[in-house]
Amino acid sequence: MAKVQKITPFLWFDNNAEEAVKFYMSIFNNSKITHTSRYGDAGPGPKGQVMVMSFELEGQHFSALNGGPIYKFTEAISFLVLCDDQKEVDRLWSKLTADGGKEVQCGWLKDKFGLSWQIVPNVLLEMIGDKDQAKADRAMTAMMQMVKFDIKKLQAAYKGV
Image 1 (cartoon, rainbow, N blue to C red):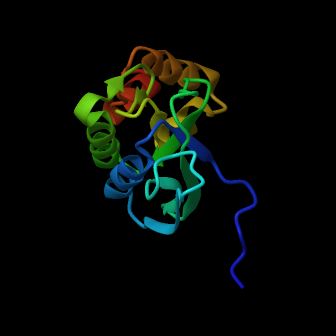
Image 2 (cartoon, one colour):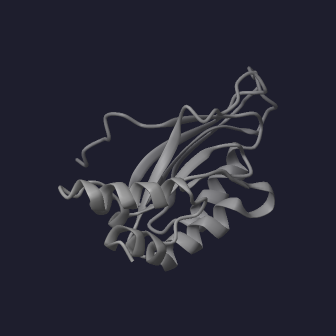
């Protein structure tokens, strides 16, 4: 029997959970819907509407609920996506900010559903974690001035050029 993920992010949407799940699945590889529950006669949502969708993005399990307009996403919770290269940063940034998403700062954005994401190149974590504090500080200073991360500019700052 496959091991079940012990902790699963559970996302509360007003009434567009299915749309959001399909949007995220169009962006990330290795994605699938694993279960869908719909409201029945007992409600509280309209009969037939998605109540909860369980899905995977890149092998990570999530659940999405159509819970009504009671709660909204805040920046206090975000999803960190580590990227291998600039092409991946650019692709994810473009798709997640499309159709009403918003760029924020320091690699953060909000998608059209109001969910916050951090799109971060792996190499940035290596640079700001360098034991050479001067290099790490230069990378951090460059990072703080960016909206979407530019790996070449981060590397230039890190190297002091």
